[in-house]
Amino acid sequence: MVISQFFKPFRQDESGVALTEALITFPIVMLMFATFIEFGYAMSQWNQTVKALQYGARLAAVSDPLTSDFDEVFPTEADDPLNNGDATPNDATITSTCGPDLENCSDELSRIVLGSDGACGTAGDPRPGVCDINWRIRPENLVVTYQRSGLGYWGRPEGPVLTMRLEARDVTLELLFLGPLLGLDEIAVPAHPVTITTEDLQTCSTC
Image (cartoon, rainbow, N blue to C red; front, side):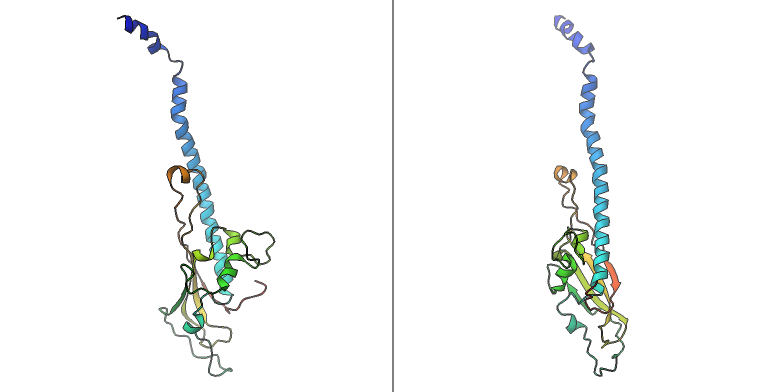
């Protein structure tokens, strides 16, 4: 009975309830706030990757081939220099691929990714590369595939008309808060393949 009387004032005292509730809810509110920030930042990185690939595909379409076996897979020499050659066969199974892990890639891939100055994120580059738009994309992250489109002629003076697909691999999202906290820093950005029809496949000095 004496003990019950002793603890009765403590049971009736509510002076610390608000502080206790705040300590419980504060981490939850901060986690939700960080989630909103991370989601917006992740969407920004996603969009940045798509724009970089679109730019890279457009640049690659008017540049020298990015695959080292391109001339073997897609011969361009005509028997008669005055003749554009035979009609291109419509066989999409014949392809030439660069990557992953830089397999079958030419040195031209580095120019597409790094730009004319050979560095990422450098201001004032007259011909920027893919990594100037998204620094997370490196040459080893890209996969380039050329395949027959059925357009144009074999032996076309400036090269065959092909379909080229550019996609990113193993590019991960950077999550500032939830990454270290929840171990979500290894989420990969989808490949986002960009397909475009090549043009003259000849590097443009002003592109």
